[in-house]
Image (tube, rainbow over all chains, first blue to last red; front, side):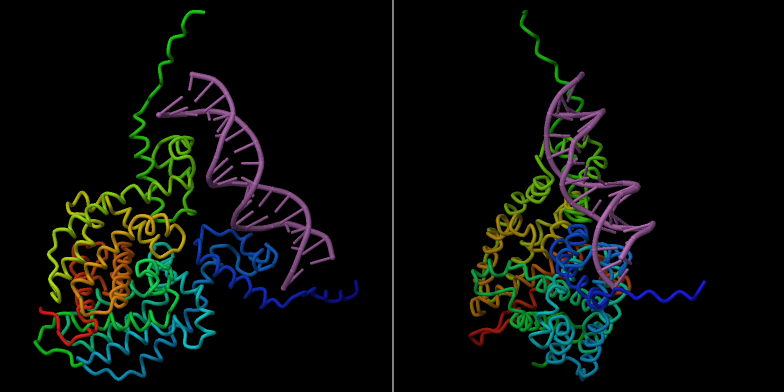
Length: 229
Length: 229
DNA sequence: GTCTATAACTGGATAGAC
DNA sequence: GTCTATCCAGTTATAGAC
């Protein structure tokens, strides 16, 4: 037998492009109807790729969902840690608290208009996962919790006279407010008769930090010293 | 032909009991995996009733989910309104704010231990729905929003110098914290190294009211008057 | 890397007996 | 009211051609 020539691959499209197309449309569709509410057929037909390519690239639907959840984690955590590192922590200073809360929230909202737009479906998906026990370990336990602990430690340093448990509860409530705001459910639009809009993330960010700073600095202290304005 | 005797119905069980069994198991299963994540076969086999009875009682899976969501709404709203009516609203009084926030939260947690337990699956399901656009109209727009508006009005009366929009944002953040706490995801257990437990609803309630009172009373005011402790 | 074809199964819904 | 039996559309996953 002569040496068989290598088969020329068909390569009608770039593999990386296909891979990304699947992830993007999966992210968008999963964010609306959740894992079980979306079929691979819906994803592949929206992404205009062949059904079989999902298993080629991701192995299974479950793995695809995992990859959608995990894809943006590292960039997000790195940004949070970087912003945290820039903050000088001054005890009993409400401005420090504001900076800390803002540094945690900013990376998931985005800084440039393009980034804000690109992260939208991911934010909505994270909001869905955050209030569910299912998939909790994949995203939060494995990836986001270590960074969240850093922020809890920093907040505890900034508020040294507040009980650690109160800080933990407060941070948990802050997370709850945050993920609910990320969901953009338009509930606040109705409750405010249109005066507030859940899709105005810049305003939501300002309001949330203002609200949460008051909550954190209002927590009871062991000593009688009050936070400086 | 002689008059045919009425056929004796088989009636192996009470219809109302079957109806309730389906609702209870549907509530529990939906609260974990959502609407699409649960099959009617899972529900009926858990409830130990026949598959066909779901369509007999509810017409469709979608109607079943609706009924699960709506079943507890009226009792909940009535309790919230009743508690609200008992509160004397004193302007710029943080104790009034605490009473208002507590009155809103108490009915969904429950007062007796039995009630707390009975409402658990419903709370978890509401938490799931609250961070999703889907089904939002069925539960919140149609049923809970009118009562939420009453509480916003009451909070605005209690804090007359705070901008109405700030009150709306603050209440929205409060709702976000609340529903996230209701989900009992155990995230706070991890973040606090077990010091706080998401299934300790009594403690969550105390902490959340304390946190949110600080947030509401810390909001900026048009006049310079501060809230009295 | 892409696509066709299909296997193997599960889903909601219903007709009709009892 | 309850249960059996069934329909069939839709599901994930994969084998194999190109």
